Image 1 (cartoon, rainbow, N blue to C red):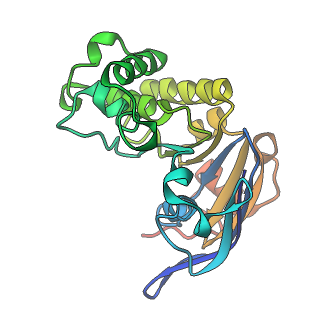
Image 2 (spheres, rainbow, N blue to C red):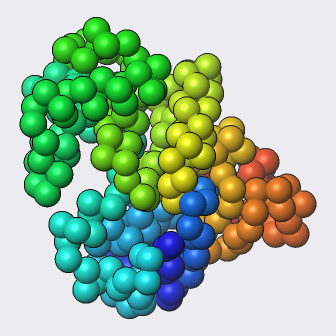
Length: 248
């Protein structure tokens, strides 16, 4: 579904991506791991066309991202943002239904609200949450609202940006399980970026490790622990010693 070939991206003198090659099969869950500042978010933004690579080619379902009609292209995606990115001035249901009431998908308000409440229930939130505002919700509830919004339009492809950041271990487990259930249920192709290994082991079908601007290792989840790659093993086990230098 998603193919990146030789993707390079620099910001001034900072060379972030140095030739990323990655293939994400249809209806599978790819998780990209790597340290902070290694280019995980930039990689996702290049796929969405929000950041234009300096070199290389990206295709989604065989279509060159650079030549795609933006509205039709982005309509295929859903996204759960790292910080939630909910609109403070809108009630929860309008946050969830934001896309449904705009653009090509534009639905009547009552229909959009019904869909929003259905998606809220799917992520374990009761109907009475719909008319609250984001500031009235806990961090875990806000993350669920963000997940409901990501799936509201039944997208073919979903991106998850650090889905458990800022959550306690129990709520992180709840969110990870929800994501896995929804991915399987919808048959969506997904890309997740995270450094949380519990998320990786719950969500992933395949794993790719991004380090120093390239994909250092990629393979199926069940191959990760036995892979003969020193960078990968240092990262997944959180070892201070190894080829990856810790910033001190």
